[in-house]
Length: 112
Image (spheres, rainbow, N blue to C red):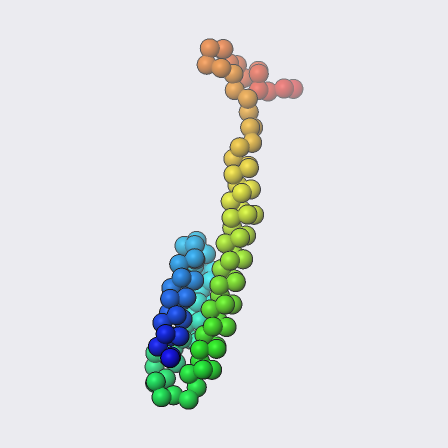
């Protein structure tokens, strides 16, 4: 019973960590450490006969959901607010250069 649930938790943990963009890893470090603290009892103190496995799993699910929502929001900000705006700015034409066949002088660019 608990084996499948614990396996699911580990798979979700791996999936959620896979969503983290490398550039945001330092930003998310405190949240990752918080989740690791929640996972630690399962690696150190809990056994198959422990009475509080259900509470442990509940805390892990809550922590995974919280981290997943945070990663989704951070990725959304990066993709929709930063990257899209950078793409728009990169397409702005700042100077219109003449064709290669035309002679170019500095007077064309400087207006007094």
